Amino acid sequence: MARLSAAVIALRKERQRTTKQIEQIDAALAALGNLSRGGRSGAKRRILSVAARRKIAAAQRARWAKFRAKKAA
Image (tube, rainbow, N blue to C red; front, side):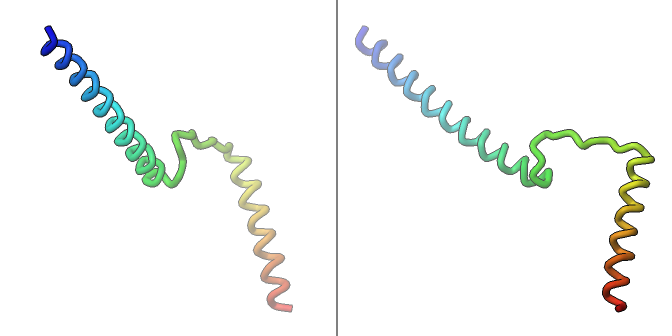
């Protein structure tokens, strides 16, 4: 009976060690996953309407025009 108890204890220790290794592997995979996605951790991208994209583009063109006007002057 003592051998069986020792075997059970050894198996429980092995399970704990293996669980810890799996957690470390999961953490490493999560870190690498964030790097490959440009730092985005599962966040969905917002979808902009055509009107919103046009408004943003017009504002950016205005900023560039202002920058170029200062540079030329």
